[in-house]
Image 1 (cartoon, one colour):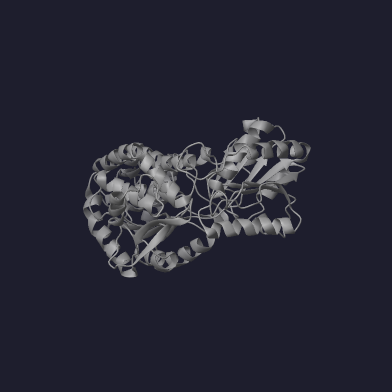
Image 2 (cartoon, rainbow, N blue to C red; image 1 turned 90 degrees about the horizontal axis):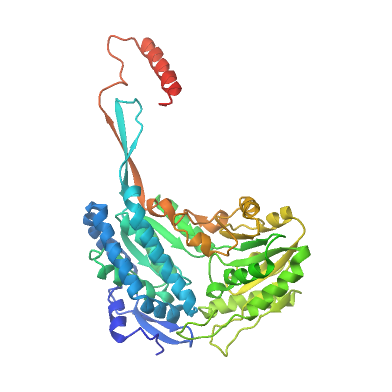
Length: 517
């Protein structure tokens, strides 16, 4: 059995113990670099999801009653443990995803940033807020934030640690319990994250982890929990939204994207090309925010293409648990199949492969070269469909308006980039793009790493936002408590209703003029 250096027998036994599973059923995950066996893990049954929910529901009663500062103390300790044990997290991530070590470390930074952000802001976000009452002085209103209950988090395989922990941490801080269903292939790193939280002092049973088949166990989570957070495909997200709607529970969904990048005619060609390489090929392109379409002015198209291909050619692609590699492996045979089909289809229909375009079995079973295409037409699979791999297409454009129209010509709306020497001009173009985030002179990290700003998609790229105030408040219900100090809404017995109506109309005019209403 192939293992990352940090995955000892003792650690594996600890992680297995964090799974809510009542039967002896088990499955084996894959060590991606070699295709060998990585870990034998328990498989949960549908009944275990109900058990997990009930345990989390019981534990969260006392947790929700704790003062916010007491809850936050757990996450202060978690943050310290996370950075102390970072090499273990990175090892586990590489083993189960095949990503380069630099990408694994970048992934670890997301929960660290999210935790530190909500440690700074949660008190203010969750404290009671005074709201204006109907009649000043007579009625006072307080807005409270109540936890949803038990939140179900269904996390994906491409960023299993960042997206599981980055979503469940604010849910816990808000006073909820959590049932986490990670992807079966990439369960080790989120299980280790759960273990870190318990070592930091999280109350017993508050965070439950279930493993197993996505439609079966994930479906049971959707049918059981009080709110759902999901990251994954648009097709699955639509199914989850429908099932959540049937139960009248809320959900937040970060889904697919076909993310565009616009190079304006004043951009620094060499610097833009180098930056775009990271935006396209981080995590081997298996990133919801990854750039798959680059629009370049006709006048500089050839110069940019040459600079971009040169920069791509300098990427180091390899397997191994060490730094110094730029691009790792795809995570599965399924991912490799999709990437190969998209490139082969484009090539067969007349697209030009400027670089790459081949699997690399000499490096590992799921490796594929960073690939740059041109001459892609609408009849090709990779034109409109998300490839989700190390493939990007360059397109020429004549005018800025055309570039914006082409960038917006998609059902998706997750992420975009604009490159220019003039930040004011770039921001003006950014405001015309129909995406949840736009990065100026960067591919994705500038927006995603800015945890004070909300992040999410438009169109078929999802519902709701992570990060920012909404990233925490989505896990709460708003409760308004109105206190009437004396009755001003019922006319006295001696006052006719018609006279009372005249009095109230005059009062409403006065309050509007005084900006009280």
